[in-house]
Figure 1 (cartoon, helix red, strand yellow):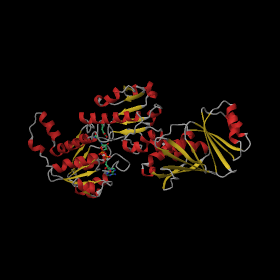
Figure 2 (cartoon, protein in one colour):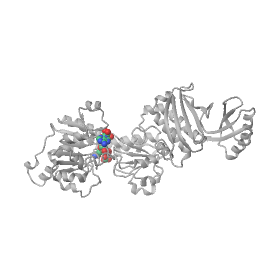
Figure 3 (spheres, protein in one colour):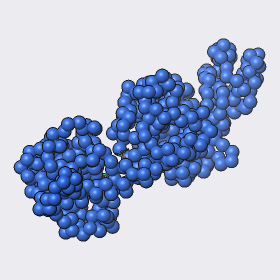
Figure 4 (cartoon, helix red, strand yellow):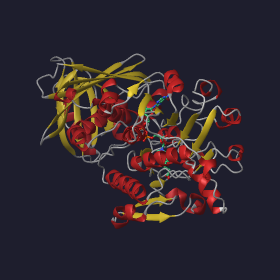
Length: 524
Ligand SMILES: NC(=O)C1=CN([C@@H]2O[C@H](COP(=O)(O)OP(=O)(O)OC[C@H]3O[C@@H](n4cnc5c(N)ncnc54)[C@H](O)[C@@H]3O)[C@@H](O)[C@H]2O)C=CC1
Ligand SMILES: O=C(O)CCC(=O)C(=O)O
């Protein structure tokens, strides 16, 4: 049974698939009301009201996934979640249309002074000359940030006969041409636009993007709109530009502090505001709730999630192809880590054959997580493996090669320790399973499963019998045994698969046999 805490107002209809699952127990409460049981939840579902801080995560040690029913994840400490191996997902496009329509509604309201006129008429006034506005037709719209919402705003602007000037450093020429907009530098957009609307995430680069310096570059009489995130337009910096009339009007749906309280901008008649309503439509809320609910179900069923913030995106098709290698990678890392139970500096992974054409980043993350698991006390998985490796000074890299050693695919892991280097190679055989085909310089063939025992010895007659006798005397049954050697009479090894794990006493008894040099327990 998985326990899900829904701590913000999320569409009940959208959550229905989760509620219907017999495997899922849903609790709808604010985190502050669930203090006593926070440690029991596997998943947390939020909108923007819940602040998912490091402190909250500390109280939720069982948490595996955080779902944001919306786009912006700035209310979630994603780094802290990543560090703990918690997957963060969002609903990237469920509210795009609503946010674009709200932006457009704000734009029309701003240039036609609709909110001001509305208040005036309801105050029993009839002052038509006080509310002369501007047409949108023929105006230049500057869009900063041309992702999902920015591009939907552009489509609507073109339908209104506006020309659209875009600044987005990541926008390709092809996409701009397809949507009938022109790409410009930020300065060009600032200088040309009659109306500027921002649609970027709030990042180090975009915080204060429209501050004093850039506001001074805008056209006199410009209108500004922020329906993205508070702080992209610097609220304090706006004040002198509104006082001087340089900025003709501002529409804000979002604020640096939400709720904004008694904000100095509210004193300006030409500043119109809404309380973060961009996504507040029945349709958007149903969409985002349905998207995160479906993703959560996939996650709990062990299927891939497609909208994770802290994992590489993985479609169902790709997941199905890499699944087998993902498990093989995990086993290679796990076995190598136990074999090289010394400090290591570097892991080098080489992919050959069919696996080299797949999304190997995921496989490498899985291998890294397998490698780190015996070494760290906290949770380590593909979400935080790269971060944990970095913290421990372990670097890793991927290579591609043609050397498959006769197999259709081969993953090779070389671990570099201070005075020792170790290589393990594995292959996945469809309908048969994973096989380790090379272990520390010796060609061998065994399944990386269960309780394994590695014995390195001199190649002498009678070794197998001696090992069998010791294990038999300790009531340990051998399921399979594979032997390999570099050359006759030289270094040889046995890999045994046992029905139960062996204790230190058995290891010591085996190590005392003449010609046995090393004995290691390996759990896979
Ligand atoms: N008011 C509301 O209720 C809602 C607000 N939002 C917010 O709207 C914003 C946009 O959302 P989406 O379009 O879905 O995101 P998106 O990720 O599809 O698009 C963001 C765009 O910003 C661009 N960008 C990033 N850094 C930039 C920079 N320094 N300068 C210029 N462009 C930059 C990116 O290349 C990308 O094209 C986000 O902040 C999101 O949180 C989203 C939904 C509802
Ligand atoms: O959940 C909401 O209403 C806010 C939506 C939003 O800002 C977002 O999706 O980024």
